[in-house]
Length: 215
Length: 215
DNA sequence: TTGAGAATCCGTATTTTCCCGGAGGCCGCC
DNA sequence: GGCGGCCTCCGGGAAAATACGGATTCTCAA
Image 1 (spheres, rainbow over the protein chains, first blue to last red):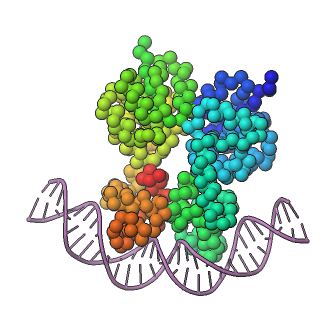
Image 2: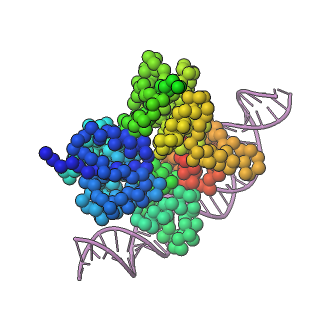
Image 3: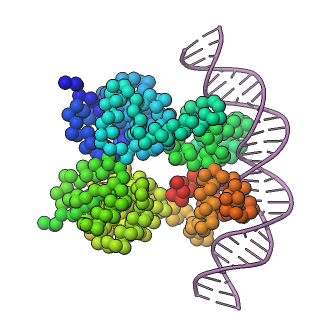
């Protein structure tokens, strides 16, 4: 008999937390040891107790899934992370996988898939929702035709610039607020356009909001 | 003793359906008589049996919540609809309420609020998630601060132009796609900037997405 | 130590956006 | 009929953004 898999759930929606709990309630080999509805609670809870598998949403009021995944994979490499979210953006999938997550599921997933993903993650095996795989393949092939592989992770500065762009600031205003030259602010914006495959700032804002990089 | 409230749940995410079921499982006065994960299944199910209260999501693979709400309120006026979704766009709230929904909740809602909303709807009383009410007030008040009452309603053309801007098209590209002169396309964009109080197209996209004017 | 990536800065040229204006035709409503 | 709203078109000019280039520091990790 295998030992029970200790599972923690982090999702800002109580409904989702309940739903996941219910889906796993009939599994004797799995035990839900904690649930969190904020990023802060999750980080504090991990200090007390580390589950085998962490089901992680991406959108929290206080932290982004990117930050959380990066922090957790560093501090608690023993915790296997399974992303469970409604964002089906290829860049987000890539980003979370790069940050050490082993599986990526959509909220629309069914019980068998969820269980399979948890078991795979527990064994250290990657698991990507089948319907997402096609999207991923497409998005991997597309960018590469331009030559260099561009993994999408924003630097601190780029993120700051992005927030100001979303707020409608011009390059000059951004430069003033960050105390850098307009030229530098521009460089950062252009880097953002390339990383997120946006043709201009308007599209950039749209992509950033959909990816949860800004609100 | 009151009779049981018959409840149906329509949500394309099995997780959410389970979560809602669990939240209501401890309520003896409520009975879940059906659950649906597609718009088609919902419409077919309603022909067989009408619940007192229908918990309705907005995003379905086959139908939009708008369509569903309009159809259901016409054909089954006895079914009280409660919107339960993760979209917190004021325009969407208004739209669903106009289509006959009695309550509007976010997926992040807790058990007491959900129960209160269902009870209110059952009695025919409107119920809006408290956190949403502020947003609604703001979106109604803001336009008025400039004196003349400017309800932000976009014309058909403006909406078409907006969608293309969100997709990252330039004025010239928009002009080509809509078969109008670049000057006209620009006029429409400038009108959008004024109506939504955006300083530039980037901010415009941000505002439009937050208002639910585009996705 | 070497190297990669982040952050900073610069030049030039072209395209696009933004801000002033103004104007004519069409349609629906009072 | 008139009036307002919508859609269309236009000029001119300033400001900003985008597309090419290239360069120097600094840090952190292999």
